[in-house]
Length: 363
Image (cartoon, rainbow, N blue to C red; front, side, top):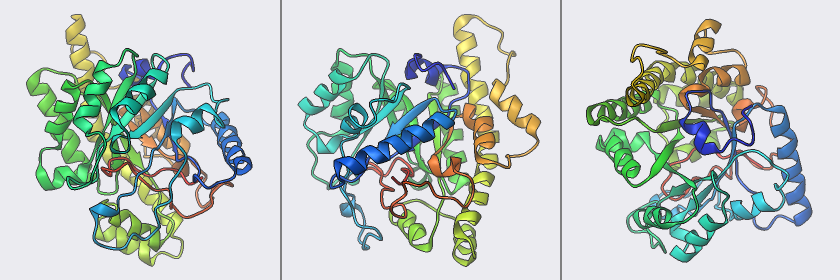
């Protein structure tokens, strides 16, 4: 793991491996005793994992964005910042706290940023639809961040499915970069073709404009049941028909999903390497360095020497994490096993209101 004293802003911009662990805070109705049990279990697990940061999701009701009935009910969760400051206060590593900005007034967002330590990171998530009433819009929230005195790294979200429909997601990323966004986290990826199209368009748009691409973190997750698959689709995740068929007809949906998850990592590697090469070239150019040196980071080379996408979650993840591919806790869990704190099948698979982040681990 990286030095826990190194700010996430340094890690996300470095030419190195990056692996994040994500979780959703417990339900707001959970007893204090049970909340601490969940936090202690997460901390114990984190001690065993070679991670560079902890993502804590902020959930919002997205019922306005779809006409079909939600497969799992929306359950309000604890404020992730409060969960980190209280039950998870023993965590000494980097933490990336999400904020669904539409739920908060500008003053609340400003206070949240003021409470972060220098070098901390957050991800701002916008509304799930243009018709959803909000207290603060995403563009205004980005301005609030720019006005803040604290040096907090701002992250944004990227939705490959939206790029497949509109062909302009890369332009959104560039506009957010102009506003001060320093990294991006994707919606959970099941259709690698859409993800590859998006990242390719973004990388070459950066090259045309002479700017270095920001780190893009791909989110990978498992699907343990048909109902979870329905939920993924309700959330707007494009799951290819052939993958749906295999998952719905498998005798072990979780195992089949695990194999597909590992396969997706291999599919994302080639286009991610292009991004790594371009990002390194831009940095070397700015420093007057040799453009031909270091075509891939150490993580890429180590992964390619392994000869495949990997046979175990952690080994595979460490190989492609340098490319910005993030695995959630289920991907790090030995195949076929659920963590002891799992209470429900992905009912906390919530993303902020604009559906931009992927699977939150189930605690």
